[in-house]
Each structure stands twice: as structure tokens, then as C-alpha cells.
Image (cartoon, rainbow over all chains, first blue to last red; front, side, top):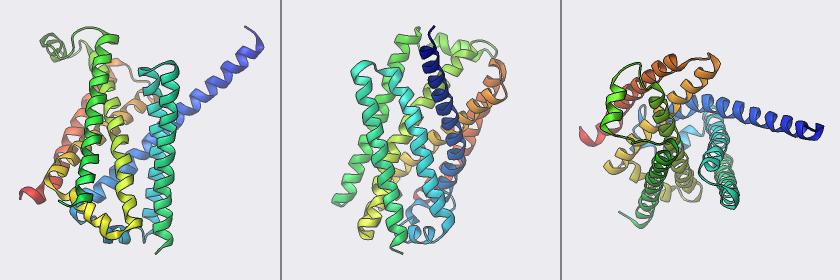
Length: 125
Length: 167
């Protein structure tokens, strides 16, 4: 085994380890953030009452702005890492690369769109 | 039902169909890759005997985790879309958001809650399996706990979600 190959393997190992840790850390974070979000929008408030006035009240608080921003970030990280592996399992070759590209595009659009909405809504207050 | 509400409902139906299609893909691929009959009488008989065929249960947990994960991401894409209406027009947001309070959508939300709870609890189990180095027996016991917690929390949540349209 040449030195170059083992260096590449080491980089691959580091990348896989980073993905492994990021997937689990974002997952544990989401278990709290998303279940909290669901509780607030379905249990402590009925879903029919979560209208624009509900959003006004919530985004008046720094806690919920941070909560929602962090939740979106963690979701995108978790979804990209999870779906990356799912795509690798069900496709190969050119189709796999296309699906990976589509995943990154959708994730970027959802993340940028969601963050823009949050920033505009908070700035317009 | 107004046009924006109808469009939102159509988008939600597309998400639901995509989730079902992915579920079919996972189960069909599993039949090819992992072999053997799936929900058969023989499988149920094996699962009924505690201590045997524990790996079988873990495999089903893996498929459920995968399907619920894709389902949650599909719903997230729609959800970010409908919340973003808020910055374009508050009236439009409120109009579309009324769909969330309908009985049909509430049933979808119950499904969302069960998917969310299973994915969250099973995810915590997977972290625990690695961190505490759980073996097959302990991780299967943890899986029973995951299922119990999902059914319990899901049942309570269902009462909260459905109460306004039933009571």
C-alpha cells in the first residue's frame, strides 16, 4: 500500500467520522427541538389557533427565533447526511450522482428559503 | 375550499404519495436484498417467541426508521413552503393554514406525530447502542421501550390533536 493511498484512506475515515458524529449530534438536538415544536403547535396550542397572530407572538421572542433557526439548520444537516446514505443504498453510477445533486439542491433551497423567511419576518417587526 | 387551500391540499397529497412510494421501494428492495418472505405467518410466529429472531425485529426497526425519516423530510419541504407564505401575505398564510385544522389534515398530523416519535426514540436508541455498547438482547429490549414510548406518547398526542373535531 503506497503512502498516497493510506493518506486518502485516512481522509476518508475522518470524513466518515465527522458525518457519523454530526448525524447523531444533530439527531439528539432535533429530538428536543422538533418534539418541543410539535408540543407547542399541537398540544399547548391547538393547531387551528397557530395562525399569523401566533407567529407574531412567537417571533417576538429571541428564544423562539433561535429555536426555529437552530431547528432548521439541524434538520438540514441531519436530512442531508441521512438521505445521502439512503441514496447510496438504492442507486449507483450516474443516477446516484444525479440524486445526490438533487438532494443538495433541495436542501439548499429549503434552508435558504426558510432562513430568509425567518430574517424577513423578524426584520419587519 | 378556496384555490390556495386546494393547491396546498394537492401538495400534501403528493407528499403522502411520495412517502407511500418510498415505503414500497424499501420493502421491495428488502425482499430482494435480505431474502425470505416478509409479513408472513412464519415471521409472525418467529417474532412471537421472545429471545429468537431478534435480528429480524432490528431489521424492521431499520426500515421504519428509514421510511419515517424520508417522510419527515418530505413534509418539512412542504411545511417550510406554507410557512413562507407568511412573509408574502398574512391573509394568504391564514387561508392556507386553515387546512391544518381540518379533520383530514389532523389525521395526517397524527401520522406525522407517530413518525416523529418513532424516529426520535429509535434514533436515541441507536445512539445508546453505540455509546453504551449494547448487545443484541439489550438493544432489542430498548426497541420494545421505543415502541411502548411511541404508542404511549402518540396515543396522548392523538387525543390532543383529534379532540377539537370529535368532542
